Length: 162
Image (cartoon, rainbow, N blue to C red; front, side, top):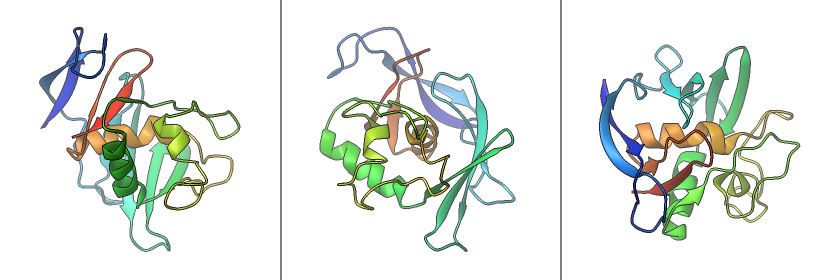
């Protein structure tokens, strides 16, 4: 089990009306991130479990996200790029999770994950038809790696770099 940050009602500095971080013990960070021992994660609201692992044999290196029978793939550099972008934002950013064919909310992590001016010049998602949901599946991994703080409300979750 790993120590992660969960949130309870209250106010966070820089984010009026958002939840306040409270450490709790969780196994959401279990796994080493390999194909044989993937990270076992849960979406921010805690409603869906999934696994992710890093595939260094591909070009570019890939994050493989398995949600039930659906496989999504993102460029592995998304970890570093998203954290750098979040640091530039300097405050809470909405996740804005959306499927590929739906628009991403302006200023959200999802919008960054598909923006033409991000470091890869567009989508971090690699599998056509499944390139979206960057704002759904990447933030819990970033939290498990100790790189971000993430809210865990039923809706409207946000993330910020540590």
